[in-house]
Amino acid sequence: MSDFKIKLETPSDENALSELAAEAFGPGRFARSAYRVREGTPPVASLSLAGWRNGKLVGGIRFTAIGIGARENALLLGPLVVAPSEKGSGYGRALVEAGIARAREEAFDLVLLVGDMPYYGRFGFVPVTPPGKIVLPGPVDPARLLALELQPGALAPASGKVKAFAR
Image (cartoon, rainbow, N blue to C red; front, side):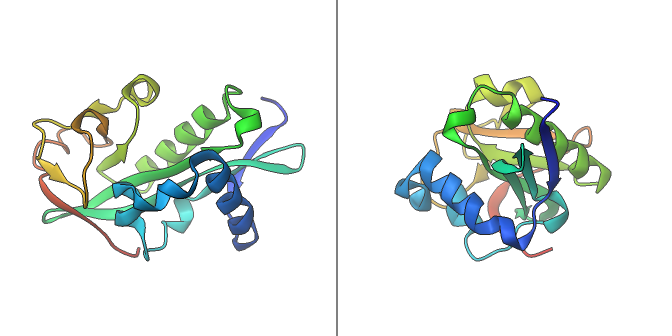
């Protein structure tokens, strides 16, 4: 990990990150509910991070500002992408930890994502319950809709439709 560096994403990183996402997730990523929330809304620039190893871009993470019902101090994590050749290296974990730390510093209350509990549970994410409490556009497996409170008690009042906004 000593050769892995995390930096703020720059405009020149965008194409390489898009290529990594295409390689990792394929063309079906555009139909996913989380993508549909983010579509047309820029990510929070101060939370968009790129991971570099030996001068090569190998991963990245983004967060989009969202409202959940009437609440507007939440984030949608994603995409988190690591080059398939670098999977299992710990780079994804480092990117998530750095992104969450920055989100806390910027006083966001809650992070939402659609992902795997075995992976994201180690960061403190929990399933959103009851199912249907938080609604994304399109179908989402309720077991994969996860949340992380950055402020204690932030999840309890969060309910309704998710909508992205520029910040």
